[in-house]
Amino acid sequence: MAMSEDTLHYIGHRQRLRERFLQSGGAGLHDYEVLELALFAAKPRGDVKPLAKRLLKQFGSLSSVVNADINELKKVDEVGDAAIVAIKTMREFAERLLKETVAERPVLQSWDALLDYCRVAMANEKVEQFRILFLNHKNTLIADEVLQKGTVNHTPVYPREVVKRALELGASALILVHNHPSGDPTPSKPDISMTQKIVSAASGVSIEVHDHLIIAGKGHYSFKSHGLM
Image 1: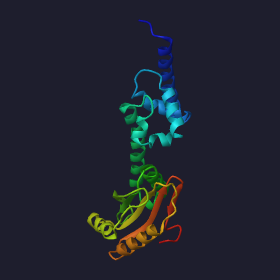
Image 2: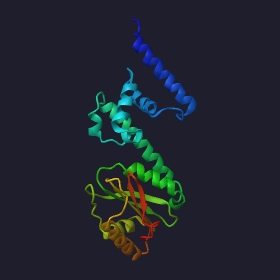
Image 3: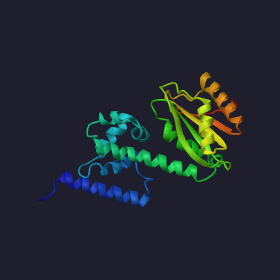
Image 4: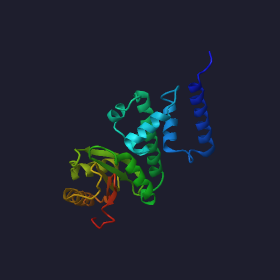
C-alpha cells in the first residue's frame, strides 16, 4: 500500500530534524523543534509540529511548557499521558543534571550552578516550599531536602526542626532556599524574622548558615548579599 503524501512528508521531516540535531547538537534548533523531538516518542506517527507550536503559543515559552501543571497540559488538544510524560521527562532530566553539577564540587565554588538548579526545581512551584541544602565541613552537598510545603504565600518553618535535621545528617553548614509563587523574590518581614531565628539556633550548635535564597519567576534574592545575615 502506497504511503500518502502527508505521511511521506512527516516521515521525511522527522528524519531531517533528527539529522540536524545530530549535526548541531541542538544548538541550531528552534524551541518548537526541540519540543517536537521530545514528542516523537509520545506520538510515533503523524506530524507533531502543530502540537509543539500550539503548546508554545499557549504557555509562552519552552520553559513554561516543561514546567506547566499536568492538569493544564491535559487541556491542550492532542496532549495525552504519553505526551505529558515526554514533556515532564525533559524537566526531570534538567533538574537531575543540575543537581549532579552542584553535588560534584563545593557549593560555594559553583554558585551559578546552584542558582540554576534552584530555579529549575522551585521557581515554577504553585505553593511555597522550604528547601535546605545540608553541607559538610568542605561545603560539599550531603543532602538536599524539602523540609516544608505551605500555601501560595506562606510556609511554616520551625528552627528547631532545621537544627535537628542538620545534626542528624552531621551537617556543618546550611543554605536555606524557598520560593515565592507570586514571582517577586523580595523577602517579607516573616521571611526575615524566620531567617534570623534559624541562624541563631544553628549558631548555638556551631552550624553556619551561608545564605538564604528566595527563588521566584522574576529572579532571586540573596539575604547575604543584601546584608540581612
